[in-house]
Amino acid sequence: MGKAATQTIERSFFSTLTEFSLVKLVVALVVAGICIGLTFTGKELVKIYHVHSQVSQISSLDSAVARFREKYDGLPGDLLAITAQREGLPAGDGTPGHGDGDGKISPCNLGWQWHLGCETALFWSHLSVTGMISENFSADSRFIDHRLSHVGSMVPYLPKAAIGEDIYVAVWNSDASQPSPKPQLPYGNYYEISAINGVEQEKMLDNSNALTPEQAMEIDIKMDDGLPLSGRVVANGDANWPKETWGTYAKKGVSNCVFTDETYNTSYLLRAHAPLCHLAIKLN
Image (cartoon, rainbow, N blue to C red; front, side, top):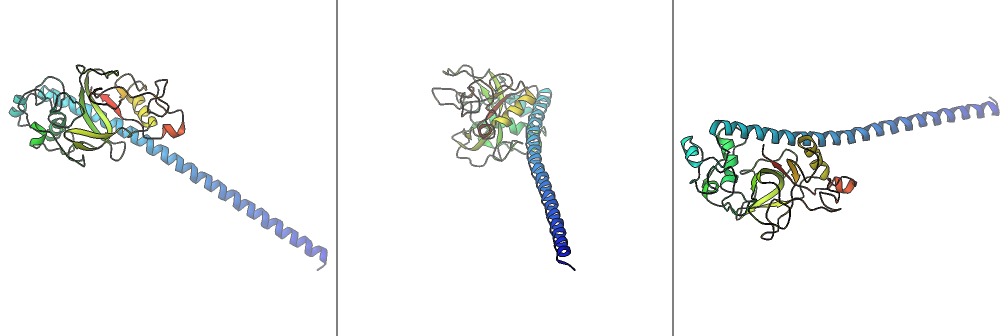
C-alpha cells in the first residue's frame, strides 16, 4: 500500500473517531441537560405540592371547626364549660379564658395572646376527641386550668404544618383592647403558621423565619388576595411586649418578608427563597 493511501486511511479513521467523539459529547450534554431540567422541575413540583398541602390543611381545619360549631353550638376550645361537661368533653370552669363561650379562643392569661394553654390548647383537644381531626391531642389538667411551661417538642400539643419540618399550626385571638403603636390585625380568631420550638411559662417560643416569601405569597394567592398586609391571610409581625401587643402586621423592609412596596419580598432570588415569614390566617 502506498504512502498516500495510508495517509488517506489514517485521515478517514481520525475523522470518524472525532465525529464519534463529538456525537458522544452532544449526547452527554443533552442527557445532562435533561437531568438538570428534571431536577429543577422536580424541586418546583415539590414546592407546589407543599403549598397545596398547606392550603388543604387549613381548608380541612375550617371544615372541622364548622362541623364542631354545628354540632355543639360553640367554638372548639371556647365552648361553654357547661356544654362541654354535658357532652363529655374536656372542660374548664367557665371563667374568662376557661370555656366562657365568648367567641374568643383565649389563653389562660387573657392579656397575652400568643400563649398555649386553656382555650388555645383545648381547641385542638376538642377537635381531636370529637373525631373532627385525625390527630390525637389529649387534654390533661394543664390544658384546662394551668399554663404549660418548659415544654420542648410541640408534637403532643399542636398539629405539624403541612408545608415543612418544625413548623406548626397554632390558634390565637387578636385583642383589640390592647394598645399598640403598630397597626394591629383585625379583631378575630386566627390560625398561625410558624416555627414553634417550645413553650416557656405558657408563651410559645417561635421563630418567625418559617416560610419563604415565595411560599407565603403562593398560600396567600390560593386562599386570599396575594397581598401580605390585607385580607384573610396576612404576614404577621413580632411583638415587643409590653410596648406592642401580639398580632401586629409584619415589618416592611428590603430584608424582610414584606417589601417596602407592601408586597411579598419575591423580587430578589435570595430573599424570595429565604425563610422570612410567618402567616396569620383568620378562621372562617
